[in-house]
Image (cartoon, rainbow, N blue to C red; front, side, top):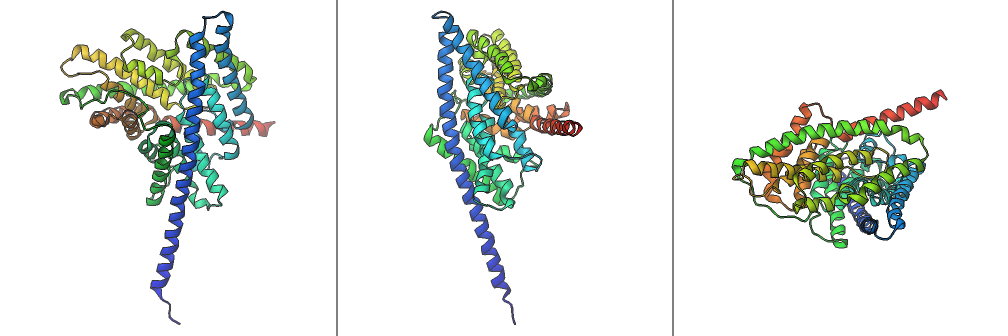
Length: 450
């Protein structure tokens, strides 16, 4: 009996092609769902933030109650977020990126039936209350869990688990910032070692991110997230200034990461307290600060707009930078759901304006507009904290449409990431994952002793 080798090979090839086609189709489904969820999340959050802004604006205008409403708004929002996370899904706290990386390595569970509703609802309360947290952390974790949901619901083999979860994460970042390329690069660069890279897994995350971004643009609009001047390429003889800014970002990134872990450890005792105590303390703190200085609280979009409009003096910019850095650490340290991308990008904008205005006084012939350094600051701070220079570069460009600045952004991000690494700074999500795993081991040992 003769065997036709060519027919067997053809059948095997057809089977592989069908398998890959299904994988790409599943990525399309994930992108559609993430886009719809992300768009609804953004619209709902915007509505809540508008209510918060009205309450803060009216504080003190009509007696005692006008002071009380914004305080109650913050306390109730933060308390509900804490209650939901502590009670039903502790892994939904924080940004969730480290949880995704742990899940891809098989080190952390991905309980999408719990995480999806809790992360969505609790994030609306925590972000809407005025905490200095970003929406990208929730949408990334929501996206990854939607990838897992699609995989489980359709009975897809476990071999596709990694690529579909990664596609959901990329789609989540794309939906948060209208930044599909940044979503793709983020998975490849930041999740390096967790994401199983091959041709079809790359195509999977590209389809997921692109589809999600398309849906969000249909629902919300296609404008860049940060409306600002599109700058021409700066004076080439002033490129050394971007090296200096990168060095400054590398030091700040090191301090930010160290202080974040110190802050998490310092406030860890609050996890044993009744959630209402923490809610009152954090909510009252944020509300009082927000009433008197609304630019210091919130994710940072309004603050970025005012910085770009040169609404602040240099001395106030310095105060704003220090205050927002400390409050962003404070906001993240109690386990509320929310990301750190946007607070970091806001710090980068403030730092860049500080640097640009200061240097313009000494080198006016090299700097036509100090706003150029705000974009470099965004990318540099991100590169130094996350140790993902390419993601920081692409994110800054996509969020501002300043494609002419790619070369100076390369200089800034490479300088920031290389020097912060030489200083011993570890990628923040790697550190957070190690901390999470260490805490889990401590809890297991404690349970065994009991």
